[in-house]
Structure formats: C-alpha cells, structure tokens
Amino acid sequence: MANATFKIVVLISGNGSNLQSLIDRKITGKRSQYEITAVISNKSDAHGLERAKAANIPVVVIDHTKHDTRQDFDTELIRVIDLLSPSLIVLAGFMRILTAAFVNHFQKRLINIHPSLLPLYPGTNTHQRALDAGEKQHGVSVHYVTEELDGGPVIARSKVHIDPEDDAESLSKKVLASEHLLYPQVVSWFAQGRIKLKEDKVYLDNKVLPSHGFTLKHTLRA
Ligand code: GAR
Image (cartoon, rainbow, N blue to C red; front, side, top):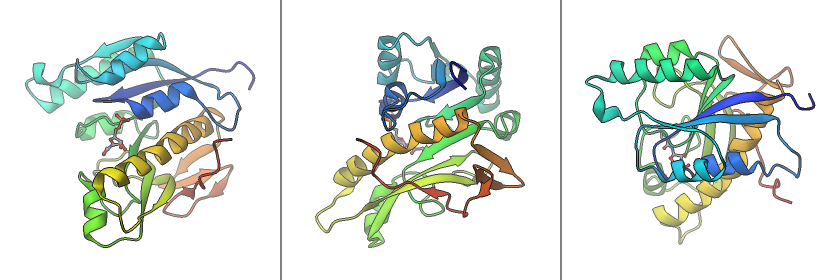
C-alpha cells in the first residue's frame, strides 16, 4: 500500500470544515493513502474553496444557478468528475439534491456525511429536530448515497450526548467535531480497500456491519 494513491473528489457548498478535516488527515498519527484531486463547489463564494486553494488542491465551480434544470447541472457535474476519474466521490456539506442519473452513475463510489444518527432525521434542521424530540443522544452518519434522500446504506456513525443545556448551535458544534474525526477515518478505510458494499450490506474488513454501520468512539485524537 505504500505510496498508493486513492483519488478522491470532494464536493462542497459552504464552509468546508469537513473538507479541512480530510485535508488534515489527523488519524491516530498515521498517514492516510488518499489524495484529494479536486474540490468542486456549486457556489463560487464557498469558504471551502479557500481552504482547498490554501492546500494547493485544484478547485472547480459549477454554479447550479447557471443551469436550467437539475438534470443539466448534474450532467455537467458527471462530466467534470469523470474527467478526474476518482475512486471515491465525497460529499462534504454539498447541499444539492442529486438526480437518480447522477447517483446511479457513481453507484458504490458516492458517500455523504449527514448530521444525525440515520435513519433518524434525514433532511435538514437535524439538531433542532433531535432536541424537539427530547433525544438524549444525537450524532453523525456516513453513508452511501442512493436515490433516497439520506437513505443509503450507513457505513459508520459517531454519537454525541445531548446535555440539558444544549441548543441547536451547541449541538451542531459537538456534532461537527465528531464529523471531523469520522469522515477522514471512513475515507481512509476506503483508500485501504477495507469497505465493501454487497447487496446493500456494508462490510468492513470482510465482516458485515449492522444497519447503523460501525460506531466510532471518540478516541481518535491523540
Ligand atoms: C455538516 O454538518 C454536514 O454534515 C452537513 O452540512 C455541514 C457542512 O459543514 N451536511 C448535510 O446536512 C447534508 N445533508 P462543512 O461545510 O463545514 O463541512
């Protein structure tokens, strides 16, 4: 595996803190074997673009407002991603609903991070919804992307406790911190060939994972 490069493309729409965590690769002190070959944003003012440039990663902006239909936008996105021929397409705060054509084109190579313990709270506003429901725990999930919104097979998750004093903002900070540990770890597993999807079941090191994926404990940062 030494020096093997596993090419990933990261899609963002905003701040890009998850992108930063993928750039930083702080995983138990080991180097991971993936390389971010490009960062693509649908917004030209996404702060994540600055993060990519600071790390000398090529950036591409594909502005969705310049495409008449969702399908046109996704067709252009497919064209650009295919030119880069990545092994994995990593959605990191990419706030677009993707067409079936896009999702099917990148089947088994497309993953997303979502701020809830899926299948709970797909969609938006997850932190407030968890609080409103009186949950004691919340968290983050990394999953394969399928046609169903936030509904594809879950690869891994991290839990956070909800404290009585938490509001949506404090909870979102806690969840983001766990996102930054979880995503680089999962992408590294892909780079090491340790994750497989067979008949909608996720395998880590050839062992089938439960439907909620591998639960990562918060012990990674040395
Ligand atoms: C993250 O919390 C991510 O889980 C969420 O957007 C945020 C992006 O933050 N994604 C979704 O809600 C997708 N359904 P970032 O731009 O700082 O990485």
